[in-house]
Structures are given as C-alpha cells and as structure tokens.
Image (cartoon, rainbow, N blue to C red):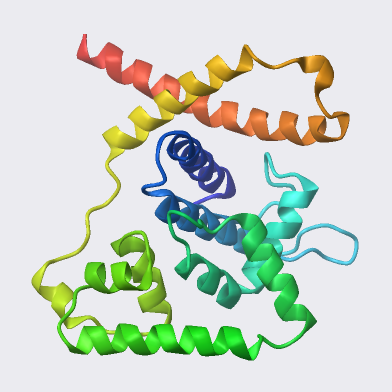
Length: 239
C-alpha cells in the first residue's frame, strides 16, 4: 500500500476511535494498535531523512498530507519496530496505545536500557501466556487474563514473542473488522462532532494549535470525501 492509502486507513480508524471514546471503551485497544502499525509502515515507506532534510529511499520525498512533525514521529517508529511492538501488544481498551506512548517509549529506550522492573513484568506476562497456552487455553482466554482487550490485540503480543496457542487451531481465525460497523460508527462520530462544533467559541482557540488542526482536518476531509463518493456511487448503482 502507498503512503496516501495508509493515511486514509489510519484516518478512518481514528474516526472509529473517536466514536468509541465518546460512547464506549470497547474496541479502542485494537483500533489504536492498528493505527500505530499503519504509522510505523508509513515511516518505513517514506524512509529516513537525509542530512539535508529530504527523505531517502524508493518513495517520493514529500508524501502528501504529512507534516514535518508526523514524518519525524513515523520515522522514529519505523526505526524502532521492537518498541512499537511492545507498546502495541500492551494496548487495551482502557489504555490504548497512543502515538505519544510509542514515541515516549522510543525516547526512553534511546536514553538507556529498559528498566529491570519493566523487563521482569514482561517476562512474567510471557510466562503466564505460555503456561495457559500449554494448559489448553485459547487466545481469547489468555488475552482476557492478561488484561488485553480482544483476540487481535493479544495476537500481536503472541506473534512478537513466538507464543504458540494450540487451542486456537480448533476455533479458527478471529473475525475481521465488520465494514458495516466501521462505516456506521464513522457516521455517528461525525454527527457527534458536528453537534459539538456549535459550542465552539472560535475567538478562544489557541493560535499555536491552528496550523496542526488545519493540516489534520484537511487530511480527514480527504478520507471522508473519498468515503462519501464511494457510498454515493454504490447508491447510484443500486438505483
């Protein structure tokens, strides 16, 4: 997938996350984990920055819709996939893996070794997962015991640490995202956001945030316009 396609997917998931944050925490861990992995992939595609500030690699040097700050953070994530994997694996509905958590973890790693307490906690979590898997527990059961939101979130943790769960073979793969639910939640989130705009006093907005908001809103509108065009085309095709 290209950078714009990955951005489009990330923006749509961000809309879903916004809706979940307003209505319920269920599913936020999985959504946040997926967004972080998309951002890591974007960082891989744009490549590292050269000494003159331009990207190097096989992809265009100025990806559409990416701010300088976003490029910096996505490159950090691409350069430290191990840290991204740890934070993403720990993403739960109550404590989703935000980009801030990932970049803070990367900065902490580059400043020094992982604290012994953190290593011990992760080792204990892995040991418990392996013990439950050997006893016949499924990924859903293990993930719930470890505090993960769902099968998909735990699956990232399991895969990154090569933990085998034999019981999963009897149940098949977990379901993919329901496209109808995603679109419905996106529409509902937009309705809620539009209602909230009536309460905004624009003269009280922070000027330092305006540029970032304009860029982010522009990116979101591109994705939403694409969704609107697709839905209209599907509607016309049914008539």
